[in-house]
Length: 628
Image (tube, rainbow, N blue to C red; front, side, top):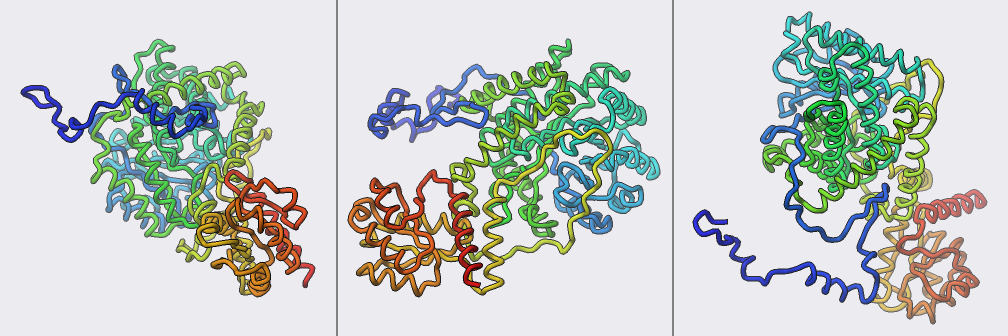
């Protein structure tokens, strides 16, 4: 608006007539052609409904979090098992824009096969040359085996003569992770609660401000859980820690100040933004229930493990950018970006630089940090935030009714709920309803290998003592498709050729192109190379081309109209030519006649692509075994 007369300065927009929701719905009705409007409403794995259009929420208040104009902390992972190499990486990161170090120890939730040793000597060497009192954040991702690291870091600070009050150390104590991640109960929860309070009091007495306790939701997310489940888990964990710290002698105000949150950020931009906003609102409600005036909690983010792919890992850069964007706009105080090759091996300097620069560009070039809660008032984000808060609070109450977070984990309550969502999520990925670009969709079957450091993964740590409970195991959604691609690579190495499928294109090019591209995309997602062509003058020519293609499988591709007259004889010709399995791209009405002619399966949008590919591999493997 102009300062003098209040007229709209968007002259271009002013030339168009105002649009109303009624206008929009009228246009939508034309496109739907009588179909239900419900088709435009999507549903999350929590059952949250996402509308196609929202109004601005005029009276929405910003969610109070990171101070306006304050950049989030750029955390870089320090996870090289060799402390000298870890030190070199840490110094390079700090010299080139990182403002904090995430010390990842073997066996931690975020170790992903690597990590530091937590010994005094390893810490000393890994942090050599790092000025701990110069504003560098030190964030710990602990494991049960390395739970004494914060005390060793405190001793290192004293040996260097630094003032603990000037050291931004976050100890990362999270005793519930032993139950959730390791599946062990080393001591009864009351004993662990007392120990936690003692450790926090000790660090606080030395002058370390903290926060020193973290409610870490990454394990729920990595195990396939939903956003509401992740929020409910961290809220229940934070309440358990709040009780433990107050019961151990801290004031309620000091206890809440000692607790931070850590959440996963993934490529679902709007849900991630809503989740980071929701955790603050939920924690504010807990504080108010305790009689405290709510204060913003410290909320850290790490880009999600489960969304990473080993195939076409360059797409991981796009996923990480979206996740960082969403976490930053959602108010995260610190962000750790998993390098693009994290799922393949220990990332090299290039991958680490890309992870670091992802944040630097969003902060320094895009200036995303300058507005506090930019999503405030956006109808879609506000609605998702509200729905997440209600869903998470309901599950939180269920956890509390079960005796709290520790009891809920010991009884398997959370594990069962996460398993149900994981199964639904994996089914959606298998059907490519949730696409993994570069893996389940648009694969590059001839992609070049990427570089990682030649460092073997760390040996698994022995499980801690204690009674066993069901652990939450991290997954990557792309893994089943990647297993098929690995099998294809092994066949290429052993025989000089990949498994192949012959695309039996029927009719003119315009008739088969769309379905031929669909079939190529689907089968190459499983490492089965598509042998394509421009169609054939006759079924005999098609059968002859199949025989010379080197393929064991075939897939008919064309329009529904051509299928009616040509699909049956074409399938019979392919069967006579020796095709071990014949697929058809589409959903023809004469499916039974096609099956009788030799068609073994139909591929189409929404089909179980993973099961189809696994069966195809089994057919190829069985044929090769018989021929040998």
